[in-house]
Amino acid sequence: MDKKKVFGILFIIVALSILLRLININKPEGMWNDEYLTWEIAKAAFPKEFFEAIMRNCHAPLHYLYLKVWMYFFGDTDLSLRLSSLITGVLSVIMMFFTGRLAGKKLSDSNGLIAAGFCSISSFLIYFSQEVRIYSLLFLLTSINLYFALKTLDEPSKKNCTFFILTSLLIMLEHTIGFVYVFFSAIGVILFASKKNKFKKFFLTTLLIALIAFIPVGIFLYGVMFNQEYFSQWWAPFSFAKLAFFFTDLFSPYLINITNAPPLFMSMIYDNGVVNYGFILFALVPLLISAIFIIRGICSFDKNIKYFLLVSLGMYFTVFAASCFGKIVFLTKYMTEIYPALILLFVVGISAFKSKGFKITILTVYSVISLFFILVSNYSPVKLIREEGQRIPVVMLQSADKKPEDKVLFLYYPKNRFSKYDKTIEGDKNVFHISKYDFTFIKDDNEKMVDTFKNGKKTYKNVFLASKNKGLDLFLEKNIFSGIKNGDRFFLVDFPPVTIFSKEGMFNILSSEQKYNETPFLYLAFSYIRNYIFDKADIKLSLNDVIEYEGWRVFVFEKT
Image (cartoon, rainbow, N blue to C red):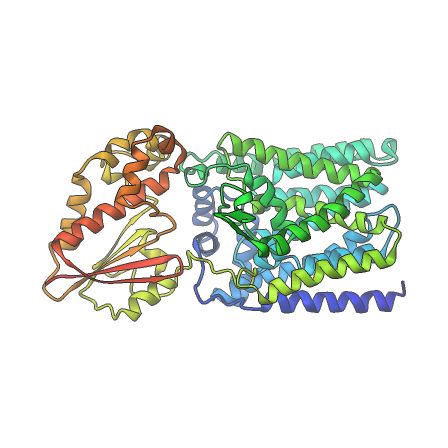
């Protein structure tokens, strides 16, 4: 293919990727929890507070360094922070063109263009190109690493080996579990590289030097990963449905397993006598097309295919095993590193079909379905609401005409979490919180959160069953009821995705040992806290209004 034509098509693909990622990028709901934590870490004073914040939140440091530099030049408005991910997202499209060219047995501009085109309309990549998180940069680093892996497999020169190892180190510095991908990637290069005798000595020597140099960082990451104040599985149990949602997330425009997927995959297809034709068309059809191409690509089984399979299956089943043992939540984004390799399996499969008309037809169908969903559907990656968006409750309080003398109690998040959107909140003496970071007073003032995370399911059951709670009574009397005057209001800011269960629902769960063991502790704790506070407020005050929007709810009580 003529070079001018190739780069002309690539220019159109890149322009499309920019346009799709700009749609609704400035989210009106503001940043949600993970985004806020990313910003909070990045803005911490360097180096002491910065690395302490990373250690507290079990993250690797590279993305936060990148974001800190970005904020220095471009500020920290929500739009600016999101643009930091858009830039890396668009660069990934360009990088996947060059990586895709190497995917087959011969250098192919067509493969590169298909890889870039796929990335430009990938809902998964579009979503994270609009989010203030690590995954857009992680995909870029992995696509660069994959480029040098393919170069090393074909020509294991000192240059290719060195850049492969350097980018591997960057992946480990970007993602806490990135070492899993790097491990299988290094094994793949060692096993499948051509001219093994030529590169073996240099590669292994360089790898050894890199590992020695990485020891201090490895110690740091070990401390981050095994930080005993953080346990992901306390809020999202593993379900086998997530194994399937992983593939629909990556190969269809329908995103399900971004935060927490339904427990049953079939419930998305057929539920209560209703067939979900939208999911069938926009999730299963693209997945079927992708599966046909990927299986066809696997059939060629050359050294590149073997490498792609090793790194993909290795990381996939490692995370699956860790999830089964409750060490990590099985979410699609946690395996971003294997997405470039899976895309290249898709690309190789397309090139393996000889019929040009067949390939054009199927790719057109795939692209039309994806683009239609992205541009039209309310479940599009550019329209998905971050229901935890922390501007929402601020706007709700403002719309309710909250007065300075009114009392406010935030559940689940600390009140300083909302100060980005209302700077008066953090210093307001009439605003309180019971956050997921410290609610142990409802059981024992001397208990630490680390004990609650570990043993809460066992030790809090009696608390949930009791009709009285001394800790909560003292908290409410001191901060809410004792200082409230006639005409003053009390705003209970509730987060329903966490406070799921009513009093009756809690009773049913507590009455069944099986149900209690299956239910995440976080939902039990905050459902109990919300129900208890609501009942107390309903006795002492009058419920005037209930305001609901997206993932938030505000109960408005008044002293009469």
